[in-house]
Length: 428
Ligand code: IMP
Image (cartoon, rainbow, N blue to C red; front, side, top):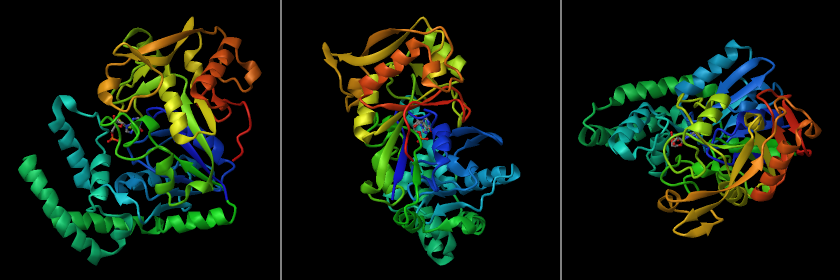
């Protein structure tokens, strides 16, 4: 009954889409467990390039069942658009299910996300503006609408009457915005229910039964551990739990079902939106990495902030998630640099820290302690065997393993499936 989790080990955008696609070949079910369409997973498969925001990246393998788990917040418009896009390219969506317990991102959540960010002014979080935060707020506040509710009009109306009153007080009195109409919101929900009904199911039971039958279930993370609402750089975080705890809650399985926890690390650091990034490189090499790696958000198009690999954050992430395996992506971006740096500790208030502080006010004052390693001249791009890597690159990989305290089983040297080095087998 093995489940395997694939988790973003940094600030998101580590290249999880490709890793999930690679590992999904040997899985039976792939389940997204957290986040919403704030995510953007790119996969280059035989059929061409695909960008997923909500649908699990495993959908491109025809033998798989794909599930949007209860921990995800679902914008029905985005989901249906993605389904349409897939169908138009010949990808069968009948293997796709959405949990009846997943919460719906309603139009007023998108509106509130934008109004709240504007109201924060200089303290804005830099959210993706997709309504993800407000949808999770309503979930915890017990005023959310769940996907299953869309199929029960009487119940839905009762819920919406309360919610619309509450939202209108907020919209008009706090933000001075126009109120929403109960009639229109109900009409929109009826359409969502009609168009989503074929996908809605009690997916937790399906997953539990599949595990009992010995099927292999891949748990697909979104965002990254350092954006986790509990363990990330709060308040500069997303509103869900991208780390391993979120995988159990967001799918409906116990922790003992998870046999492998795969942490996906990028060979350097990036962050989009506000919040501390101790190993950030302002200008110079940071710009070189951004341009070379085209580090612009898949969802918002915003330029990502770039920095060297942060081993303090990496070790924290590995311990927090209990990674059994690490994957290193985008190593090729560092090809040709004379030297590469790694942040091995933080310096703050005259002290050296080797652990990741819990407080953003401390993190914001931390300075990186660098270790400089020789770079490598020969390209790693497209390499398929460890022995094809230049010695400098191998030394870099080995040093990262030591620093994060977790073996690297897989190295990605390009966006295509075949541009992958299997250092040691990952049994999925
Ligand atoms: P939200 O998730 O839209 O509320 O945004 C909260 C923070 O998380 C912002 O800094 C976003 O830029 C960041 N964020 C959300 N999703 C992703 C992602 O998939 N990759 C990288 N950053 C993300």
